[in-house]
Each structure stands twice: as structure tokens, then as C-alpha cells.
Length: 222
Image 1 (tube, rainbow, N blue to C red):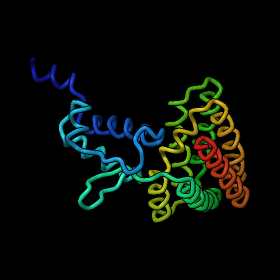
Image 2: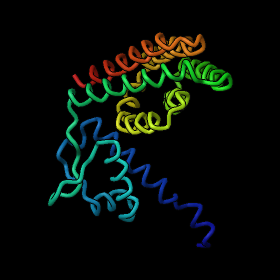
Image 3: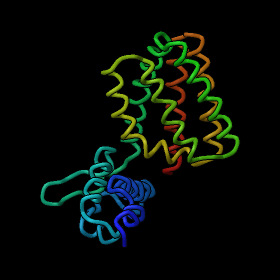
């Protein structure tokens, strides 16, 4: 097989690691991979038909999302996911997002506000069509723009770190069409407050939004 053809049929290493990480992430959230389960590199490489390098990268991704941890003498294991831990993560994220929102309402440029409003309108169409994957991707961009709109590099770093830890749970709660539409309605209040340059209203809307998301995730764990 020519090298060019082989390159076309074999996914890049980084993409392959992301696919492996996403698959394992879904299994951990669903409980298929129980807390304490060992994530053996060679066994996973055999399962996914991959070398150990992308598997190792995938496990690092899971660790960055706090879904796995390396334990001495045991290797990489699935982290225990409890209601208390998820509650604490959402509580912390709610405070960080509220702070970002307060600053964003004061500091966003006109072009940043216009771009956020346009994205929100596009997401409304996605929610009405039930385009979950597109909405999920746009949702990450939406919240990132608020983080960036705060114009505080240190705050941005903290927000992005927490976002990575919460990403699997926020992704799972958006799979329900009803929750996706409600999320978009909550975004309406957030965007409106930012456009009106109302820091306190933005802060309040973001706290309520994160509380709503937390309830959706916790209810799914019953």
C-alpha cells in the first residue's frame, strides 16, 4: 500500500487517543467501567487495535478530567464518581463562571458581545432541531467566550481547568432534548444581561444556569 494511502486510512495518533478517551469517558459516566477498575494499557491497546502510545495519551486525558488516577503499585484506575464530588465541582464552577460573567459584562468589547449574541441565536436553532452534538460543541465555545470576555488570564486558566473536569458531565446532561432547550433559555438570560452591561444580573444568571445543570446531572444518577 502506498504511503499516502496508508496515511489516509490510519487516523492521526492524537485523534485516535481522543476517540479512545471519549469511549472510556462515556463508559465511566455510564458506570460500565466501575470506580476502582484498572485501565491496563496493553489490554486497552488490544481492545482498540492501537499501539500503547495513543492509549497512554487517552489515559492522560482521562486523568486531566479527573475520571482516572495513577495509583502506586496499581497503575491507572477509574476514579470514584460520587454525587458529593459532582456537587462540589458544579458549585465551584458556578462561582468561577459567575465571576467571569461579572467581569465580562463590564469588559467585553462590542464585537465580543455581538459574536456572543450571534452564537446564542445559532444555538437556538440547534436546540430546536435537536442537534445535540452541534449544540454541545457550540456550548463549549459559548462558555469559553464568557471566560475570555472577562479579560483576566489567571481567571481564564482556572475556568478552563474546571471546565475540563466538568466537561463529561455537562456533555451527558445535554443529551436530553428538554435539557438542551432549557439550557438555551438560560443562555438567553445570560446574554441579555451581558448585552445590557449588567454585572450582577449576569452573575446571578450564570449561577442559576450551573445549578440547573448540576440538578440535571444529579437527577440522572438516581
